[in-house]
Image (tube, rainbow, N blue to C red):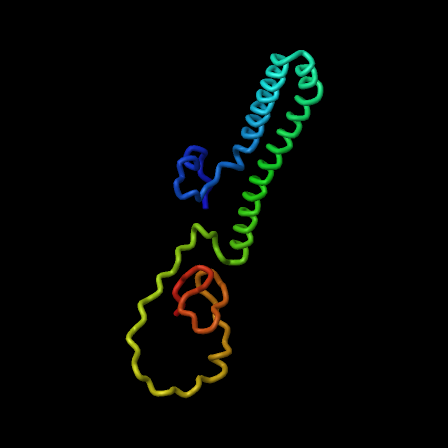
Length: 158
């Protein structure tokens, strides 16, 4: 899957392309600015109340509020980036395992079940045919049992 540009990703309504990982630094800078402005507003409010409260806010409460706000913002943003990295790692593991990227693999259409018919019991097939391992011609994944479609890529099996 080709990476999309920023604007294409921004207006991707299927959410198959993410922009959060590209914007995380900008979001952190904006969070820092907002927390600093909130802290400044708190200190100014305390100074407006009284000089003692203002000094208390400037020396103790302001830095404490700023540090706690920065820790909170950092934890939230790190959590977001970890979620996106887990998504990328799982997608890479899936591709390496022959499963293909989830957005690239269409779900197979299952054929309608035919009407049941009475069939005489057939002789058991030879063990060489029943024990033979089959593999998908498209992705190379092992075909289990009598599946008519590859469980990894959805390609019909002959």
